[in-house]
Image (tube, rainbow, N blue to C red; front, top):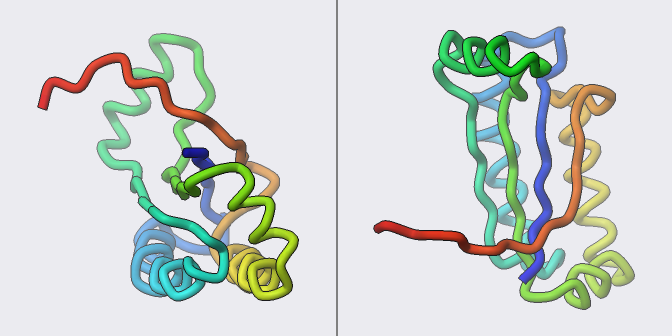
Length: 124
């Protein structure tokens, strides 16, 4: 599998509460509706919590402030992702989601990249 990781920072013009509400209740269902066209097989939102603890971790390591959250999207293969990007319906679905993201994500402060997972341990 291949996974897209999208580290998000909210637009300064919206509150954290509005950011999380919109991302979960409005954008999330749009991604679910577009999943088949994009050939995506899994989607997870991880919303940042415990700002004081996050700040302590960042300060202790000299790191930048935490992101507001992370989105993860999985495809069965890189070929499936490339095919979705090349297909008119897949490309249109991705464009619609990108336009919706512009309503709540500060693109210039966010980042996105593809990964492959390497399980080190799973104690559950």
